[in-house]
Amino acid sequence: MIAVTGATGTVGGLVARLLADDGPVRLLARDPARAAELGIPGEAVAADFDDPASLVAALAGAHALFVVTANPLRPEHDPNLLTAARESGVRHVVKLSALAVADERADDLITRWQRRNEDLVRACGLPWTILRPRSFMSNSLAWASSIRTRGVVQAADGTSRNACVAPEDIAAVAALALTGGAGEGMTYPLTGPEALSAAEQTAVLAEVLGRPVRFVGTTPEQAYEAWSRRYPEPVAQALLHSARRQRDGAKELVDPTVEKLLGRPALTYRDWAHQHRHDFL
Ligand SMILES: NC(=O)c1ccc[n+]([C@@H]2O[C@H](COP(=O)([O-])OP(=O)(O)OC[C@H]3O[C@@H](n4cnc5c(N)ncnc54)[C@H](OP(=O)(O)O)[C@@H]3O)[C@@H](O)[C@H]2O)c1
Image 1 (cartoon, rainbow, N blue to C red):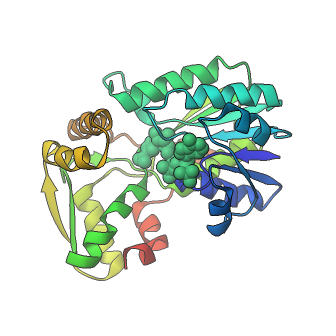
Image 2 (image 1 turned 90 degrees about the vertical axis):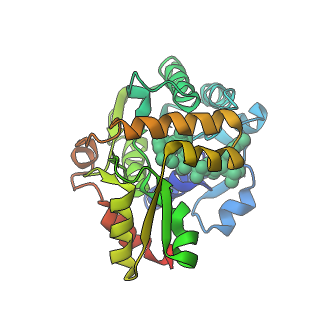
């Protein structure tokens, strides 16, 4: 039995769908009914990272665990999960981290949180695999509403490039690791096959959607104004730091690991946009 956290989220949901083709999957969700509503295959059980007892119960009988945590302001979530995994007899932990961890110039709240999470995984006493994705291609779904209503994408800094990766590729690597096809004790950088700017992504979307879409660039500082309305202040600050690093070219490098592990080219942004065309229309 493989247990998947974050199953109602982007990567966890895709991992669960891939694993369900080959064997039993257990979805750990705060609201198991929601996992079922989303049509994600697998046995959904209640589990809250804030409630260690719920985690131990939810992991009973699981031999592998996919760890997705998403709140850098709750640093206890990862240790709670790892402690429960040890108590429950889990034999392999696959952790979703972030590629910024590898960049010594990255020193924001989110990166420091993931660095510490990685340290905890490496020290937890269980075999582990760490996945370090670059930005998700699916982040551009945040543009769907303004594309639909105004034919506009507004994003920070239209010219700097990011070797963004498809969540579908991250999930495929995670499924491989969870089923023993990728190495224990390995840390994998995961990028897409090319680096694109937000303006270039917008041009791809316009072509795929068959309608004009105008790009309006903002500075990272202007984007910060919007983030600080949506997120707690320390998270908005971390996003600003990250946007400035991108502007300085820190996220351009393309890595071949996805293709090496999957035995096929990594999905391009165009591939991803075709698959998600309906989400923008
Ligand atoms: N987006 C990017 O560009 C990017 C790039 C690199 C790395 N990452 C990393 O990717 C991870 C996020 O992955 P994602 O985007 O797939 O996640 P997501 O879509 O944001 O979903 C988060 C998941 O965590 C669950 N969750 C939140 N709080 C919980 C709690 N207290 N107990 C149990 N479950 C809880 C949510 O379940 P509910 O349904 O209960 O809310 C949801 O399933 C983060 O660690 C981030 O640092 C992201």
